[in-house]
Amino acid sequence: MIDISEKIETLRSAIAATEVRARQETLERAWRGETPKGEVLVVARAAGVLAAKKTPELIPYCHPLALDKVAIHFEKGEGRIEVRAEVVAIGRTGVEMEALTAAAVAALTVYDMVKGIDKDVTLGETRLLEKRGGKSDYAESFPVPLKAAVLVTSDSVSAGKKGDKSGKRICEAMARFPVEVLSYEVIPDDREKIRAKLLEYVERGLDLVLSTGGTGLGPRDVTAEVLREIAEREIPGIGEAMRVYGQRRTPYAMLSRGLAAQRGKTLLLTLPGSSNGVKESIAALFPNVLHAFNMMRGGGH
Image (tube, rainbow, N blue to C red; front, side, top):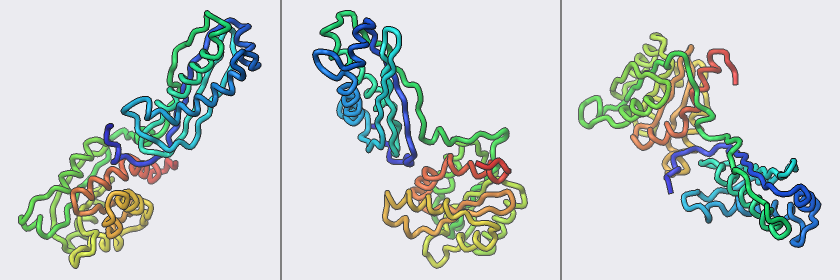
């Protein structure tokens, strides 16, 4: 199966539909449950619900999901019964296959239960009507890309004792979003230098500042403290989102003190110093965090 471990959990939903076509007399009997095999719609509804739950067993590359809702609806028309399946779950992948499978199996069940009294029964096209959830629903667009800076705070990197991976990973990741990195710099873990650089970015009118390093418990880890000193408003939920996401992957995530704050019209995020911590933090926050700019500019939710 495809690796979806980096995805965040969101509310997912999908609606799919198909139809059973038959003689009107057959459909009326099915609707009333007056067939040799009994209550057609009752059995078909149960079959559709079961099919949604069993989808990963039927389709090899579907991930097992804890479904929160499966609903099968029937609508009678001229010469047809429409079967509609609605599926809802909170997870890391969509539920369209569950909805499509549920609709198809419910329709097949109707077919099976009326084929003995109608040799002309057929099935219509099975189609996805609606799909919601996932990062695509939270993507943001801007007339002009957001202007950003990436700041690496590390004594060893600034001294040339080791190369930078985390800052470069941030720069590469931002290329996937409407963000243009205008500045990439490396400075030591020095409180005054960090403070001066963050304020410089704000004064330059940059929209987004992403720093990496200085969020742990080392004696020189001061980036979080500096950001808190210059912040006009902290945004606790962003730091919480990073830690919750990371905690599900490594117990050490609880030791990160990364935070986020607003100063003027600039959003400042402090990410962990490790390249893997940066990778996980970006997966946890983007593109959802970019909605902050619509809010900061008066757009609301």
